[in-house]
Image 1 (tube, rainbow over the protein chains, first blue to last red):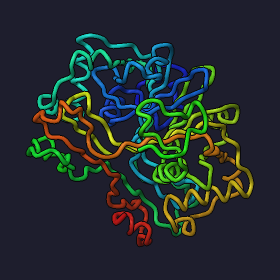
Image 2 (cartoon, rainbow over the protein chains, first blue to last red; image 1 turned 30 degrees about the vertical axis):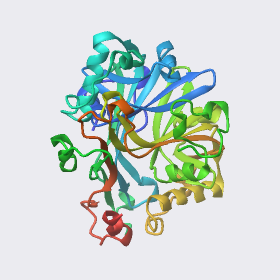
Image 3 (spheres, each protein chain N blue to C red; image 1 turned 90 degrees about the horizontal axis):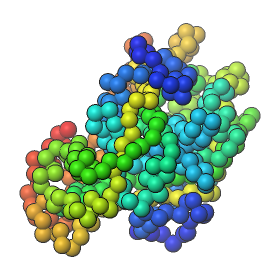
Amino acid sequence: MNDTASAPSARTRVRRVATNAHYHSTTLHAIIDDAYLCHIAFGDASGAHCIPTACWREGDYLYIHGSNGSRMLKRLMDGECCVTITHLDGLVLARSAFSHSMNYRSAMIYGRFEVVEGADARHAMEAFMEKLLPGRQADVRPGSDKEYAATTVMRIPLAEAACKVRTGPPNDDEEDLGWPAWAGVLPFARAHLPPVADAACTLEAPAYVRRWQQE
Amino acid sequence: MNDTASAPSARTRVRRVATNAHYHSTTLHAIIDDAYLCHIAFGDASGAHCIPTACWREGDYLYIHGSNGSRMLKRLMDGECCVTITHLDGLVLARSAFSHSMNYRSAMIYGRFEVVEGADARHAMEAFMEKLLPGRQADVRPGSDKEYAATTVMRIPLAEAACKVRTGPPNDDEEDLGWPAWAGVLPFARAHLPPVADAACTLEAPAYVRRWQQE
């Protein structure tokens, strides 16, 4: 179902199956918060590149980080890009071959990253750890000044974004409804397998590790 | 571990953590065959775009399809692009904050798509269905001439590609090995949830649907 908000720009207006478009920040935030990775498209002299990287959200920004030497981060300082997150939720089996589809939730964000520095960068990196595993930050050897100095944290505003979401059963054309093929959805989920302790680790697993399989 | 093949071009030579680079087609094919979706980066007058789309492989080509009216497919006919697939396999918990990582398998393919036409397009679309669910094609109402005429199938050669794979335990620096934090991997898997039959479907589920949860 479409929502009542409208596209923030011409390039975020969904044209294909526009009834699946969503422009509300609630949908956008939920899609980002369910992701560990995004794909970032940007161009340089050797063409267009599509690079996966870890991401997290705070407020109305999506954050990434990397080594100071990263070519991608350098290019992202110079110009605009497109950040995309996609969750695949199911295969949609219709009676006709061409009505088959997939259920998914995707978000595209256009704009320009800015570098986050100093205490804000430290705060952002700790928020990243907290997002990955609440409680983990307190247990680990914290980042040193040297490690922070070698790392670039960047963020992009979520102002120019669009989501596309498909849920629910297949949509066969009226004349195909009598075709004798099973119709429905085969859903996917991201499952957690049992934690694998490092061979050299003799410590008892903390609560956030023991909880991994219950989530 | 690195493999013995080398990068097919300057832009596919992995620079960051180059020991995780793989250039063999066996690795590339396995990453593509485990995917339902890829992200495609391409540029046009409004900037770089990163669009998710269904994909499949036959031989040394990656295939996609879409409506003839798709702006992305039109742009892909005009120039080069970058196709990326990423599987997230686990969170890697090290003793130090900055040694945390993720286990993943990713593939990047550079090049230019070409349109697949006529009998080859029909064959490719049937191969796509067979990849999604072996046995499904025989059950469904096949595509009509009109449906095929409205659909564009494209393929890109896998000649210029690189993979990056991280597996295994955390790599803490020697001096952090004594830090008292649990270390190990929290693995992900793509799980199959129970099939959801369409409300109007009274047919018994075929074998490939009943098998869904055992796979």
